Length: 212
Image (cartoon, rainbow, N blue to C red; front, top):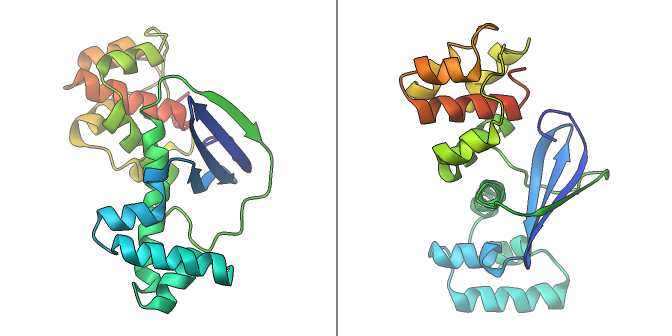
């Protein structure tokens, strides 16, 4: 979805947990979750932005007035809309990053127009992929994901324009310099200053279509 410019919903289910990513032209814009701890109200309580009592009162008003939680909290003076929107956008991103920790899940894509959300994910997809791999993929998992060590990698035509959005760490960036259309994955990992960082950078670019 990241590299194919698709528009629709990508649904992940693992056990009783479910997260859905909504894409518009290949860019993730909204992420939903059925996990109670990932609801924006619970997040705001954990961050001490609101109290449990304030959330309880707000949810009562949501049911009574049929308005969105954000609108109710602003009307109550609990927090300004801008702060709420920033927290919600961050939570959407965190739901995507948490998906990288799942090792087994059923996945279903449904072409559908994106939801009309006023708040959308702020981070570019390149940054989300790089950060998700940093948080949840160790060397063994990266190596297993990159099943062909003899694959020769070359940069895609638009790579130089998009690579900066990855916000690579120094050792990751050093590995990417070695991608020249002649070296294999194994060659690059052997010559790079950090093997894990090399695997991470290469796998991120492969997932995003930045290397072929």
